Length: 203
Ligand SMILES: N[C@@H](CCC(=O)N[C@@H](CS)C(=O)NCC(=O)O)C(=O)O
Image (cartoon, rainbow, N blue to C red; front, side, top):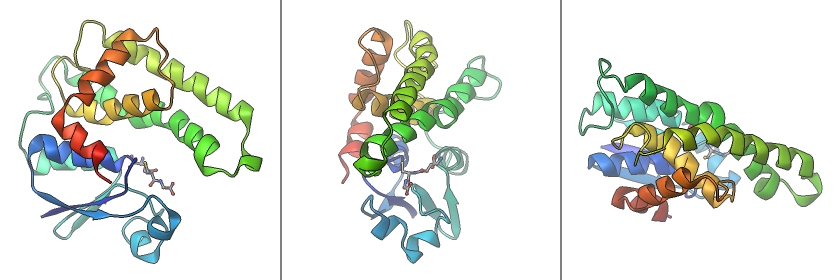
């Protein structure tokens, strides 16, 4: 059985969301989003940096949320969350899938560090403002791509599980401004999916 090493309010939600969309059976090792769990020897033996998500599939262990999503889609072929390589929307799918960790998550990470993780005396308002600006800029092309579309490549796909999750987080951090109408309705579309609800309400 697939086993997800998980903590709430994290990218591990992407994996739960994926497995729920695909209706694949899985179990969860729930940890607290806290160094006592994530930086424990036990968890560092799963992920050298003590991060989540990590997936176990029998003897196979894999980390990096995007790699896990790809792995599950290929090894447990089920559902229709990835266009075939011959399809016109395949390049778009790849682009948005990777745009998530490449362009959107770096400023989100900085915002979380600067608002939640660092003690107040070490926070830097300039770094925070710069990250907020960069995040808004990174979201603009996503907002444009969503014009007239319910999901990133039209139909719901694993690109939404990656980038949609990051858009949801951006919105929760107050970084999707009111003019980004497509993004606002995209986040609502995601929020309506039962599999997403299971993933974000898991604690
Ligand atoms: N690029 C990695 C990022 C993994 C990552 O940084 N996960 C965060 C949770 S969203 C984490 O484990 N943070 C704990 C820490 O930084 O100590 C992925 O997509 O899996």
